[in-house]
Image 1: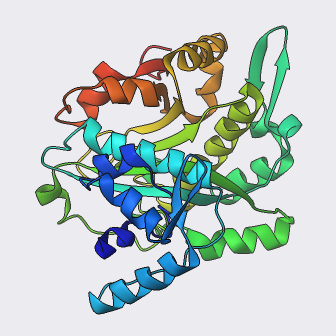
Image 2: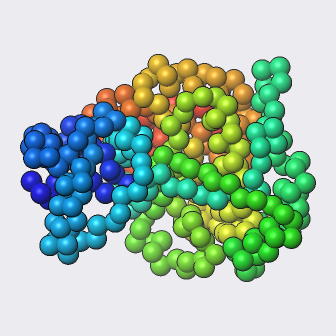
Image 3: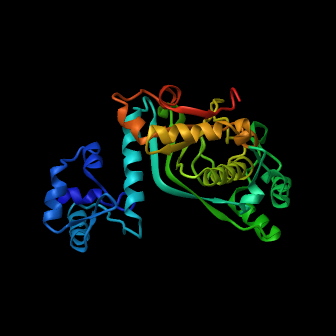
Length: 324
């Protein structure tokens, strides 16, 4: 029973019956741990009490396992991310490859731009305008090399970006995703590829799926614009030769996955965003935007073999660079 406490960790501090079962644990343990005063109800699930945290650390130490500090968290949000992660783990096998998931990952975006500097909405149409901002123009001028043509040239990297930021007065803001997947395919082949020392976010030779819990349209439009800017930095600063084409000359998929609780909510979100057409991805091609829901993932009774199968057959397509 005590070892079940090890499931409660930094990125997964809240659990419920469904997530316990998805993780292969006996859901009856939750009741026993609560009765023992080790768990308390919060956010629709269970979190550690002080006694539970003390025993978790003791159990980890006895098992020679790390026990990272659990920082502040919102139980409902933590439980939702936990559920999304576990359902996605069951959504496809990842045949021949490796699935690298992170929860609540945060990325720096520079320059930091306000909503009215990112996009405008006129006559029912959205246009992204960040490309016209003086700081973005300055960044592009400082780092002009990108794409396959940049291979063989040293990538500028973080130090060069920091120098530009100091000179230009640009600030950084945070881009946060509920779930992130780096899907590394054909691991045996790609493990021999040379790593790029400037690849700060480990995006080379991987399909990248950024998961966002979609709520308001404006919040989602903000996030899309900031994702554009994050991709711009990777294309010109961190991995300019490999941001979109991998070391084996295959296209890397960069995908924003908008996630909702139910199918009705997903349908409404997709309908609104589809109305904006290719404007959602034009400044950041190639970029895919798709949708899924907790309800949809629960209804998937068998896993697909690869991320491609899951993407093609199990998601709602909102914007695609190959047919937009």
